[in-house]
Amino acid sequence: MSSDRELDQRVLRLVPSIAFRAAVVVLLVAWAAWLVYMVREVLVIAFLALIIAAAIHAPVAALQRRGLPRIAAVVAVYAALIGAVGLMLAIIVPPLISEARELADDLPLLLDELRARADAFLAQFGLATGGSVVDTILGQLGSLGGVLTRIPGIVVGFLTALSMITFLSALILLERERGHDWAMRFVAPADRPLAARLLRKVATRLGAYVRGQLLIMTVTGTGSWLGLTLIGVPFALPLGIFAFLTEAIPIAGPIIAGVAMIIVAFIESPVQALATLVLVIIIQQTEGLVLVPVIQGRLISISPAVALLAVLAGSAIGDIPGAILAIPIVAILTVVIDDVVIPWRQAQLDGGGGGSGGAAAVAAQEAEASDAEASSIAESSSGGGDAPD
Image 1 (cartoon, rainbow, N blue to C red):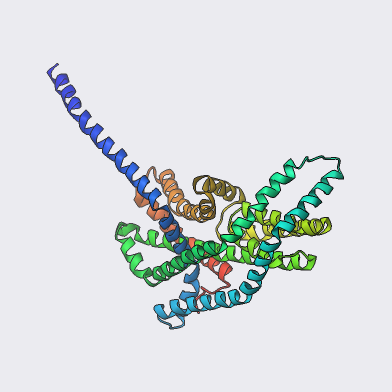
Image 2 (cartoon, one colour):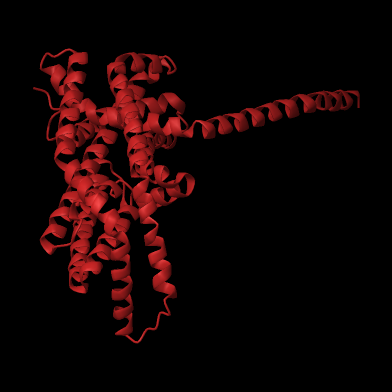
């Protein structure tokens, strides 16, 4: 009996301590979640900078292999990119500003024309709108005038964020080795080869994704501009740039751009609207059947179903930034699952619970195959720029 009483007394003494520790853990987790929420914009910028650094690492490494110091290679790559972007802006911006001003001036007349055409089109099918449906839609479109007046502020904010991301990505590239060594301090010596290979594979996949996504955006924007120009749709250049930018938003972006192009074409004539609809279908089918499977399937090993679920979850959590970052995050998770979780589970099944050492052993056995896969991904996405000389 005395032993039971002593046990009960020990339990009673431990309960407040356990409750206090649990409360402290809950408070720390809540504080960490609040802190992450408060700095979410900074975290998004940092993650985007990491992705861009991963994409630019391939040409930097190629220049280093040709004997150029790392800082000179980084400066050369960024100078080439900035020069190319500056040349493109010098060619595109003047006509873009002219057409944007023309669109802002003509917007009221265009909306009146769209209202008349929509009423006439619906009347052909015996649909009496009463003005409610059409006016509601046009009322939303009329807010475009306010959006156009805010374009300078939007552009300034975008360029500021882009400059910060570019500068931060350059710093990440310059400090890559130091950051790698610092991160390895938190890893056990036996697991450092696996951790280094994980980082290398993640960087390769993220770089491949960014380069592939830029290719998709360029093809979509250029195809939209050329197609609209051939059809005779006004404001083809702004619409092409709009299609290029919205392509960064998975799933919803191409739909938004397609609807905008069809509406502008419908203002001119129903025939042009029909031709634009065909153009949108051709572009989206080319993207969905050719470009996206290559990027998501071959380069980053993500199935379309997983990509769709990831985008939906990301948009629910973080709106547009969440949707944009969803697929890169899933790409990182797939690397961890393929190279850590599955080998660890396989080691348990084969060796009866081999623990972390077994997982490391299995992962080491698969290192050669994974490195070959990473090299294949890099060569596919950068045209062999990462291959040894």
